[in-house]
Length: 419
Image (cartoon, rainbow, N blue to C red; front, side, top):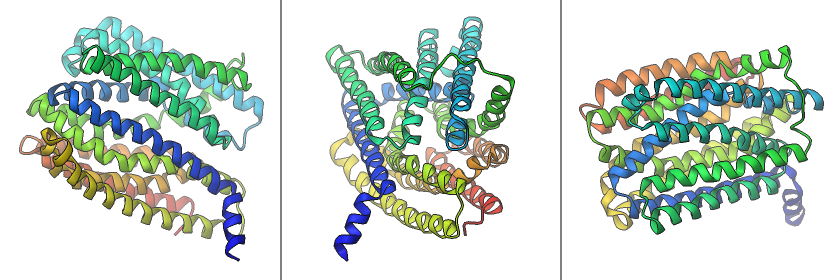
């Protein structure tokens, strides 16, 4: 009986693919984590703060370049005809290209203004814009492999990207002594390489064809993506804007300390995203073919994953609290921030378990109301409290993430009563 159970698990497609996706995600995270430690050894907190300001700028800009329309490819993948799906993909890429041109004009006209606001010179604003646009193609390519349940291709591509970033960053930061700029130029070079690789694979697999977007696909993509811009911006507000607020009241070195703690806590969120890569496909497939036991299966999986995320959170918090003072003592001041930031990451993982129901039923406008309103509340608290202590900023992150997760959970019950 035990052998039969083991054989059933071994041959289960969901289990096999989920394990492979998780393995590659953890491998990517491990390489990224190692890079974090290496950079901490060669880059002082002040430069680490500068690097995080650049990455925060890229994260915000990426929201507007993609218009958050890439997600509709996943939602339509199991229901749309092949030709319609290809046309939608072309629409998404055309919209991103148009957005890229608009922001290029804005940088040409207002780069000096942006420099005063975000603290990055025009050169790095352009590099950030270029990285954002090229990464749209990689995102679409990886999403399709994920939806095809092709973890091997997904893993080889994603690990190759991370390894290329890792190796080139080491060469530029350590070999050429370029400091934080070495990491920036490595991102640009690798993004450019895999931009062309993604185009090649999308054409080869028949997804990227000369299909002109029509009114229906443009309208559908924008209707899905536009409401998600405030939603995604709200995530940036909660994670990225805090760094600028800290930089305003303190110094770049304090940004570096806080960001260092945040990056360790982000390990939890990375694990959540890794499981969500498979879990979202599992949910979409089940909701597309509802059976008598669908609800019970989804509920069981949700409970197991919530417990798993709680255990991961505890392990990361305890482990990093010991690790940082011993191995990277110059960042020991980051330890007090770990508890609230780890808890905030835990609530974000639980959020992933329920938000897919809103995506499937295309309730992105309702999602926007929840996340954006809470993020404005986050901004208010952050601006009011950060001046007194950065610790308040960390706890604001935890509390707001908890409130957003609760709001998404309650609304998901209205459209599909899982619990």
